[in-house]
Image (cartoon, rainbow over all chains, first blue to last red; front, side, top):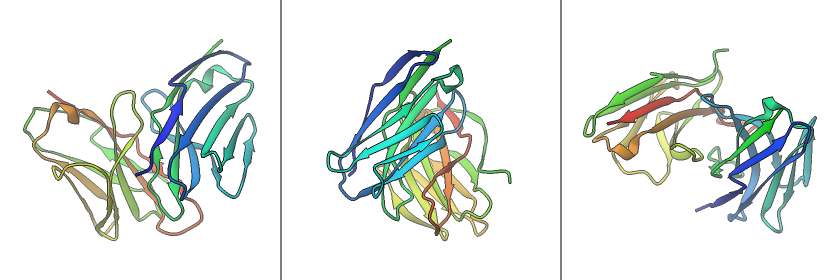
Length: 112
Length: 114
């Protein structure tokens, strides 16, 4: 089955710095890559996603890049703010599947 | 739109007991998936229900079973509880068709097995 590796497990930055979280996947048939944010005690929520026909996608301060050849994708957060503090999960899915395989998560801590 | 709802919020059970968790999907969604999220881990897929049938199953034992009702709501049942079943159980809904593959998660049920 699909295996998704996520690094780092913990990331501590100062407010205003950038943060980068990296994931790799194993299933070459995967073509949808969502990122979820889970604040403490809350549900995971989709923050951005990318499909395999696109190399980069940006939404305000967050962006995701995908290298399908190398089977890795990354989340970039610029100008981090304390409210960005949360656990971020990457995931991969096959086309037509509503079943993502999640990474183990990255705990992002943004210090004011 | 109430989004995905789950009940109960918290539950404490003893080893060997049985538990039933409930989920109502987001309005307009007819597919329900269940996930187990252990502390410090990502959600692990348990199974998915569509048209009242289990469509796909993850690597979980038969102690985990489910059901989907005609109104698309769903139940997760776990028999013969083990300490290792302690986790946050998340329900997620999605539309059967459409261009979005997003999973809409509920708030989860925190199960503690003692």
